[in-house]
Length: 86
Image (tube, rainbow, N blue to C red; front, side, top):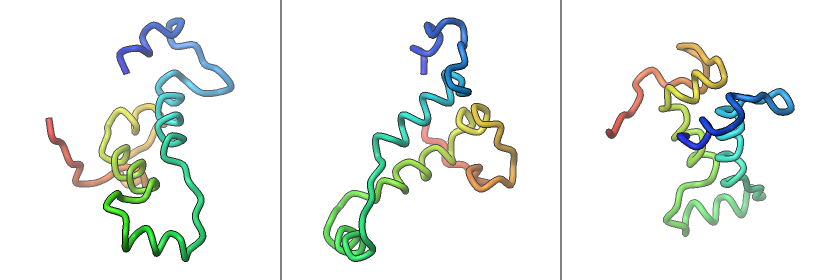
């Protein structure tokens, strides 16, 4: 997120701040659409977690995400017991 500091001092584009655009891009990277049957097959055969879990599982642990979107304690995208590795 260091690169966002170069972004014209926080210019809002189409209603989104630099931090919000960063997280929207993160979500789009893992965006996918599967039929329920295909999702079930992947859950049984693919070692990777589904894209929605790769996104929501990560950002719901990040105070930076909550700050960017104005999420408060108790909101669905804010974990009560956040996981911190570093």
